[in-house]
Amino acid sequence: ASYRIYRSTENPPASSAVYASTSSTQFVDAGLAVDATYYYRLSAVDQRGQESVKTSWAAVPPSGGLSGSAISNASILWLWQDVTGETGYRLYSSTGGSPLVQLGANSNTWLETGLQVNTRYDRALRAYDVLGESPDSNIASRYTLANPPSGLVVLGVTESSVALEWQANGNPAGTVYALQRSLDGIAYGEVASGLTASSYTAAGLASLTTYYFKVRAENREGVNTPFSNTVSTITAISL
Image 1 (cartoon, rainbow, N blue to C red):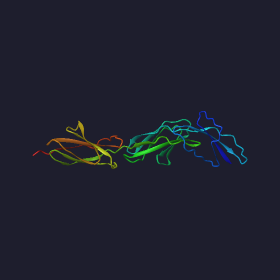
Image 2: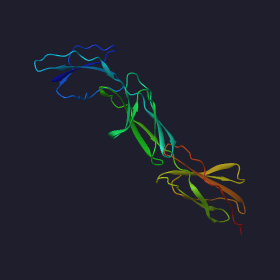
Image 3: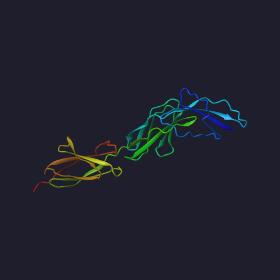
Image 4: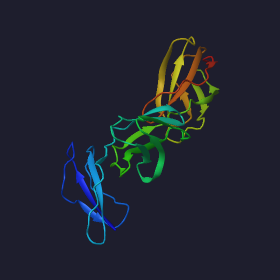
């Protein structure tokens, strides 16, 4: 036996022309438009060329706009607009491969966990039904959050400078940091930002004065972490 496939982009669907014929029980319809709904129906043809009754029309719906929100340093919440007529959704890496997850009908979110800190992830969504999958949605990109830096310490003090160092706390290379300073431990101001090293020397300070310092990181989309521990020190006396 062989099969005849009918396709329509109208709603309600209407097409009497054979769109494709195949002897396989699978068919891939390529080159489809993004955010368009396609309707399909199927019939079987025997060796004498007699055609069976056609199936009911079924739709492969579009995938609604995909976006992501970083929830933690290891998780991203993916969101999309639910569409009608789908059996469910599959989320893929933008590079393809097997689906990362398969979700049921009317789903519109998925929390992806087990990710790397301050790392970009690109995802695509497909709706599916009994006839197959829709084209890819838009490609959505999101970075996970950075870790707060830890272990801030004072390495050295002069009458006009304080040398500081902190731990990246698992953040990858390229993570940026911002340092803040205070005279009373309450009101802070930023003294350095965009730092990619895990050390900094605050200069131009007054001698014999107490200073407080704290540092934070940000991910590659500029989302700040909480601050590290706070350290304080007194600059040396000017001779």
